Length: 144
Image (cartoon, rainbow, N blue to C red):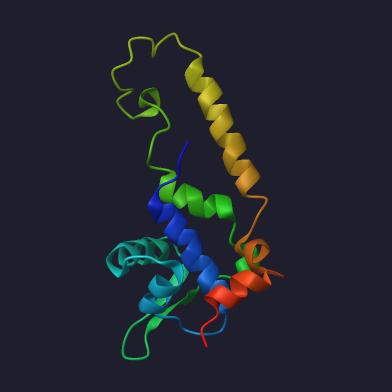
């Protein structure tokens, strides 16, 4: 399993906001610190806002801030927000794909169980866990 670039950018964005807690951060600051395209980042920010994970502030002093405390933002929730629509295998697609074994194969249940375990493991971590006591990360992400 490989996560998408958007999921990675979403986590970087949330960590950036957490490190700069109490400050409205700008998209270009995140892009520069995280080596990301501003256009790609804009799509991620939009989805984070729709999911209620961040609040966007319009205007000259605009940018974004975390909507919740970093200790309440579970990593699994973020990953599911960005990866939840992507089926792990074709038999997990809404139309069940083209697999001729779909009606009798037990592999789908094994994959579903593994995916649940994956999200359960990720939900043991929060954005706060990823940023607290991480001096090097703070050095890289803190806005001067």
